[in-house]
Image 1 (cartoon, rainbow, N blue to C red):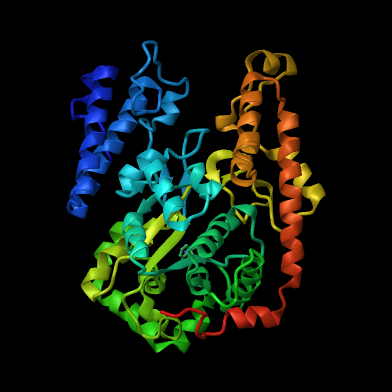
Image 2 (cartoon, rainbow, N blue to C red):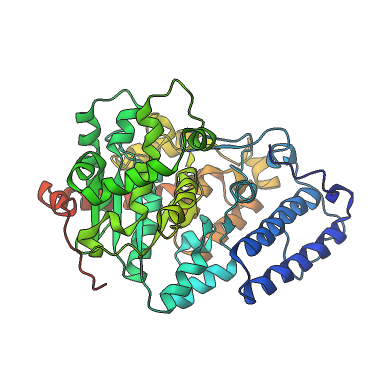
Length: 476
Ligand code: TRP
């Protein structure tokens, strides 16, 4: 499908490619500074990213401005799997898989999806505009891709605020640690920018896709809301809603759903989501329901009827198809396109070839797991990048890039220096797999038990408060 070859880049030397990359980087900067057309900047950035991917394939190194390729550059051993030349990673709302033990090739995904990379410049800018140290999910490339973040920050600097929208498909009572990632990050964004947040619980979606009753899906929505609330959201700034409840309660929301439905054809959703003639019509029209919260007029009680407040959606990259569609229809129905911040996937215990799944207990660490279960799961199932014997490990060192315990630490260990020391020690062989796993266990156990404590405090009354349509504490 996506073809990075055939443009002659295969014939160039690493140095030539490096020089072209540097020139393209300059080009992008000039365009951005000159406030060029959005599409022109995007095209130049796409080309730059594509060249970076090719550069990495050719040299085995990441492109760094000011650092020409070293003489003896070689592609990594696992190049065949990592470059995806033999097969393409699968990333859509229902499937995530790759052949590479390192996980999905996210640079390639940016090129394929046409989004932009969260680069150092953007992270620095978020720091400047918010006045806060960037969250480690930003510092470490966990939220790695975006759409229109610069526009959101430009407006914010001019005192034009925005709101946050994220969501969850309640397919079971059990949530795992991976599900927390977007919520932890959304909470941080809400705190540093002090803005309203809406959270959609798509109980309707799960009813349409899974073998569950409406009652079950709705009950899961309410149960999941408790875990979401336990992340620490402020009831005065946050509205959580179940589609099954809110669609019937809000004419404004339903009007936006119908507007989207009128402007997207069956052919388009077939192309975006792969629906077929035998999918039920509920699935075919569902994307309009996930699109509607991207428009402030869907929440008149919060935005006082204003339809021009920009939306920012933090989500895992597999949700992007919904929002590509949303961004496509937005101008045609008189609305602003939502901006996005995309995260990588939280890997399964068995390895980064796929993400954690709530339906297989052994691939995941659940928010209900006891300290002992956490310990056993990590020790027994976490895929290790260590060597087979202690002797070999001491001699050759481990590979943190494919080690699941290390990957989980990048999500949950906040201290950058400590993390880097662990990485170095693992690489050198000074740190053994068992010791690395122990560090992860000791990091996760308190996080999970504190979550359980906070969840216990969430009463039915609190859930009701969050889920009641009402004004929030903002002057717009
Ligand atoms: N479809 C998502 C899921 O199955 C739930 C969802 C709805 C969502 N709206 C969202 C996720 C907005 C992220 C952002 O999990």
